[in-house]
Image 1 (cartoon, rainbow, N blue to C red):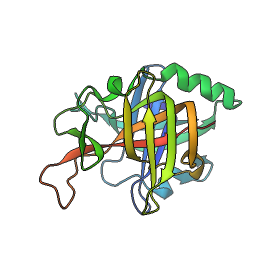
Image 2: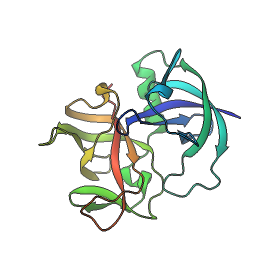
Image 3: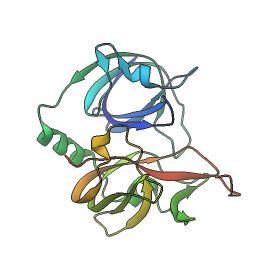
Length: 214
């Protein structure tokens, strides 16, 4: 079985590791390709003539689907190899139209009404959250660097709901440009369960996959 995904996520996971995600325009659903016995890395994403880039269509051989993958990471699938990558959009206007078509009406519609603020960071508690991937059209968006030089994002969605101090983990520099933006697509993600050293609980941490100031 093969699956063709319009790539909407390419993020850094530390070192050479990457997280990739795509949207199946047939099933109208996000998927996150994973490898069973290794991790997606730079080499996987830059194979000769099959370089993964945002908004290209990548076709994968599916090794197995998750049976009722537990929320919020309901998008996970195992793939065995990358078959081909091809261009499908002719210009930025077509990309914008696509992103608006797949966008969610609000941040809450992606994660559910579970977001908490812990030590100034937006998180989702363990065993909560509807899903882990989404796209919104942010009414307002500010991208900046904090006092440690790390890229952070403040966003307000179309309902007026606001989240601040969100890490941006985009691999490509063009999708984390410092600036202020209005009514632009924002790709939302959610980490795996993780506990900071000085904390007692594990959380899913809300993050920005890309700021799409096309």
